[in-house]
Length: 173
Image 1 (tube, rainbow, N blue to C red):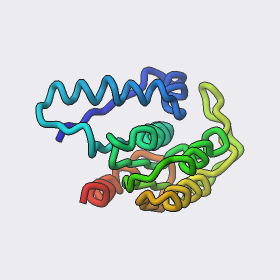
Image 2: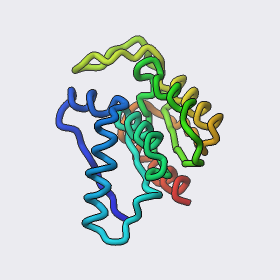
Image 3: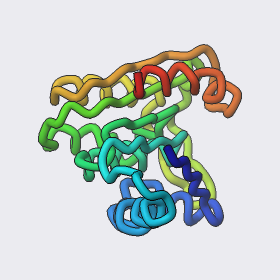
Image 4: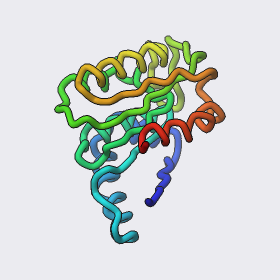
Protein backbone atom coordinates (compact mmCIF):
# COMPACT_ATOMS: atom_id res chain seq x y z
CA UNK A 1 0.00 0.00 0.00
CA UNK A 2 1.21 3.48 -0.82
CA UNK A 3 -0.41 6.71 0.39
CA UNK A 4 0.12 10.07 -1.29
CA UNK A 5 -1.17 13.46 -0.17
CA UNK A 6 -1.50 16.14 -2.85
CA UNK A 7 -1.93 19.68 -1.59
CA UNK A 8 -2.88 22.87 -3.39
CA UNK A 9 -0.70 25.88 -4.12
CA UNK A 10 -3.12 28.58 -3.03
CA UNK A 11 -6.83 29.37 -2.78
CA UNK A 12 -7.29 30.26 -6.43
CA UNK A 13 -5.54 27.12 -7.69
CA UNK A 14 -7.62 25.09 -5.23
CA UNK A 15 -10.79 26.47 -6.83
CA UNK A 16 -9.42 25.83 -10.33
CA UNK A 17 -8.00 22.35 -9.73
CA UNK A 18 -10.75 20.90 -7.56
CA UNK A 19 -13.90 21.85 -9.47
CA UNK A 20 -14.44 18.83 -11.73
CA UNK A 21 -11.27 19.63 -13.65
CA UNK A 22 -10.45 17.01 -16.29
CA UNK A 23 -6.87 18.29 -16.63
CA UNK A 24 -6.29 17.76 -12.90
CA UNK A 25 -7.87 14.30 -13.08
CA UNK A 26 -5.42 13.42 -15.89
CA UNK A 27 -2.54 14.65 -13.73
CA UNK A 28 -3.63 12.34 -10.91
CA UNK A 29 -3.99 9.32 -13.21
CA UNK A 30 -1.20 9.82 -15.74
CA UNK A 31 1.46 11.43 -13.58
CA UNK A 32 0.82 10.67 -9.93
CA UNK A 33 -0.39 7.07 -10.17
CA UNK A 34 2.41 6.28 -12.64
CA UNK A 35 4.98 7.85 -10.32
CA UNK A 36 3.70 5.81 -7.36
CA UNK A 37 3.94 2.62 -9.39
CA UNK A 38 7.46 3.43 -10.54
CA UNK A 39 8.54 4.02 -6.93
CA UNK A 40 6.76 0.96 -5.51
CA UNK A 41 6.96 -2.30 -7.41
CA UNK A 42 3.79 -4.31 -7.10
CA UNK A 43 1.34 -1.43 -6.71
CA UNK A 44 -1.65 -2.22 -8.93
CA UNK A 45 -3.14 0.21 -11.42
CA UNK A 46 -6.63 -0.69 -10.34
CA UNK A 47 -8.38 -0.87 -7.00
CA UNK A 48 -6.96 2.49 -5.95
CA UNK A 49 -8.65 4.66 -3.37
CA UNK A 50 -9.01 8.40 -3.97
CA UNK A 51 -10.30 10.80 -1.36
CA UNK A 52 -10.76 14.40 -0.46
CA UNK A 53 -12.60 16.86 1.74
CA UNK A 54 -14.69 19.84 0.66
CA UNK A 55 -13.63 20.90 -2.86
CA UNK A 56 -11.02 18.14 -3.07
CA UNK A 57 -13.83 15.70 -2.19
CA UNK A 58 -15.73 16.99 -5.22
CA UNK A 59 -12.66 16.49 -7.41
CA UNK A 60 -11.99 13.03 -5.95
CA UNK A 61 -15.52 11.91 -6.77
CA UNK A 62 -15.25 13.36 -10.28
CA UNK A 63 -11.87 11.71 -10.90
CA UNK A 64 -13.19 8.38 -9.63
CA UNK A 65 -16.19 8.57 -11.95
CA UNK A 66 -14.00 9.48 -14.92
CA UNK A 67 -11.53 6.67 -14.28
CA UNK A 68 -13.54 3.91 -12.64
CA UNK A 69 -11.13 1.28 -13.90
CA UNK A 70 -8.47 2.75 -11.61
CA UNK A 71 -10.39 4.10 -8.61
CA UNK A 72 -12.53 1.37 -7.07
CA UNK A 73 -12.92 3.26 -3.79
CA UNK A 74 -13.75 6.91 -3.15
CA UNK A 75 -13.77 8.86 0.10
CA UNK A 76 -15.71 12.11 -0.23
CA UNK A 77 -15.98 13.97 3.07
CA UNK A 78 -18.18 17.09 3.03
CA UNK A 79 -17.68 17.21 -0.73
CA UNK A 80 -18.68 20.49 -2.34
CA UNK A 81 -21.28 18.67 -4.41
CA UNK A 82 -23.31 21.90 -4.61
CA UNK A 83 -20.74 23.22 -7.13
CA UNK A 84 -22.12 24.50 -10.44
CA UNK A 85 -25.75 23.71 -9.67
CA UNK A 86 -24.85 20.17 -8.58
CA UNK A 87 -23.25 19.41 -11.94
CA UNK A 88 -21.58 16.21 -10.72
CA UNK A 89 -24.93 14.69 -9.69
CA UNK A 90 -26.11 15.13 -13.28
CA UNK A 91 -22.84 13.67 -14.56
CA UNK A 92 -23.37 10.51 -12.47
CA UNK A 93 -26.58 9.78 -14.33
CA UNK A 94 -24.61 9.37 -17.58
CA UNK A 95 -21.86 7.13 -16.15
CA UNK A 96 -21.59 3.46 -16.87
CA UNK A 97 -21.84 1.17 -13.89
CA UNK A 98 -18.89 -0.70 -12.47
CA UNK A 99 -19.91 -1.22 -8.85
CA UNK A 100 -17.30 1.08 -7.33
CA UNK A 101 -17.69 2.04 -3.69
CA UNK A 102 -18.20 5.60 -2.42
CA UNK A 103 -18.19 6.81 1.20
CA UNK A 104 -19.90 10.20 1.09
CA UNK A 105 -20.32 12.11 4.33
CA UNK A 106 -21.58 15.46 5.50
CA UNK A 107 -22.11 17.17 8.83
CA UNK A 108 -25.53 17.81 10.31
CA UNK A 109 -24.54 21.47 10.71
CA UNK A 110 -23.58 22.01 7.05
CA UNK A 111 -26.78 23.90 6.27
CA UNK A 112 -25.36 27.09 4.80
CA UNK A 113 -26.59 28.26 1.38
CA UNK A 114 -26.62 31.49 -0.57
CA UNK A 115 -22.96 32.17 0.14
CA UNK A 116 -19.85 32.80 -1.94
CA UNK A 117 -16.43 31.36 -1.20
CA UNK A 118 -13.28 33.46 -1.59
CA UNK A 119 -10.93 33.94 -3.30
CA UNK A 120 -12.84 33.32 -6.56
CA UNK A 121 -16.32 33.76 -5.08
CA UNK A 122 -17.65 30.30 -5.94
CA UNK A 123 -21.37 30.58 -5.34
CA UNK A 124 -23.02 27.97 -3.12
CA UNK A 125 -26.77 28.18 -3.63
CA UNK A 126 -27.53 24.79 -2.06
CA UNK A 127 -26.68 23.48 1.41
CA UNK A 128 -24.14 20.65 1.69
CA UNK A 129 -26.60 18.15 3.17
CA UNK A 130 -29.13 18.43 0.33
CA UNK A 131 -26.44 18.25 -2.36
CA UNK A 132 -24.80 15.20 -0.74
CA UNK A 133 -28.14 13.41 -0.41
CA UNK A 134 -28.98 13.95 -4.09
CA UNK A 135 -25.50 12.82 -5.16
CA UNK A 136 -25.69 9.61 -3.12
CA UNK A 137 -29.17 8.90 -4.49
CA UNK A 138 -27.85 9.34 -8.06
CA UNK A 139 -24.91 7.02 -7.33
CA UNK A 140 -27.18 4.33 -5.95
CA UNK A 141 -29.61 4.64 -8.88
CA UNK A 142 -26.66 4.03 -11.17
CA UNK A 143 -25.75 0.80 -9.31
CA UNK A 144 -22.78 2.26 -7.48
CA UNK A 145 -22.36 1.23 -3.88
CA UNK A 146 -22.62 4.49 -1.98
CA UNK A 147 -22.63 4.82 1.79
CA UNK A 148 -24.01 8.08 3.09
CA UNK A 149 -22.82 9.14 6.52
CA UNK A 150 -24.27 12.09 8.42
CA UNK A 151 -21.89 13.03 11.21
CA UNK A 152 -22.48 15.43 14.08
CA UNK A 153 -20.67 18.67 13.34
CA UNK A 154 -19.81 21.11 10.62
CA UNK A 155 -17.34 21.66 7.83
CA UNK A 156 -14.25 21.05 9.93
CA UNK A 157 -11.16 18.87 10.12
CA UNK A 158 -11.92 17.30 13.51
CA UNK A 159 -15.15 15.80 12.13
CA UNK A 160 -13.40 14.31 9.11
CA UNK A 161 -10.65 12.89 11.29
CA UNK A 162 -13.21 11.32 13.64
CA UNK A 163 -14.89 9.31 10.89
CA UNK A 164 -11.78 8.50 8.83
CA UNK A 165 -11.03 5.04 10.25
CA UNK A 166 -14.69 3.94 9.89
CA UNK A 167 -14.71 5.18 6.30
CA UNK A 168 -11.53 3.31 5.41
CA UNK A 169 -12.80 0.13 7.08
CA UNK A 170 -16.06 0.35 5.15
CA UNK A 171 -14.35 1.08 1.84
CA UNK A 172 -11.58 -1.50 2.07
CA UNK A 173 -13.35 -4.08 4.20
